[in-house]
Length: 192
Image (tube, rainbow, N blue to C red):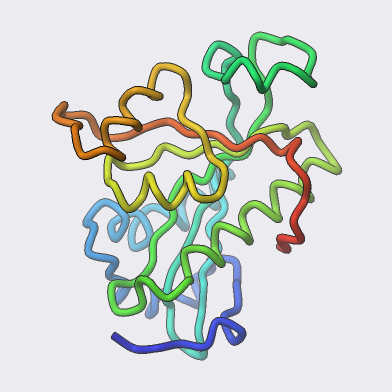
């Protein structure tokens, strides 16, 4: 594993200038590798998502993609209704993908990318309606703990599933857990 200085991490929007770096990206998850190598740029051209690359010097060490989304009110925890007018659904920004290169994992790069994405969501909410950040988290203990640590909650129907995953009791064969973060919470200085 190569150690990096997070202060030197920079974020750039995906473009064809990074094709050589993108083609070499490997986070050990084939679906995330395939997305960045073959789909991310086209989705960006089609205005379906925008991908930002996390670069350290001349290396691509991670990426995340953001897209518009919404969350249906029945998926929210009842406590999230205390300060919001009830509508059938609410505008959100989705973290569509987030991946760290396998040689640079567990060094805080994922945290920096999440902070950057959350900062973008806060800035977006100053210009257009955006109340929540959503993410479909793979059924993976590390991933669930990662998002939970930052205040993401599972939707109501996934609450028991997350509890089972966190306690090692999950046995079903499902791909993901839908989680959300309420932007009403105080802004903690995340930047974009």
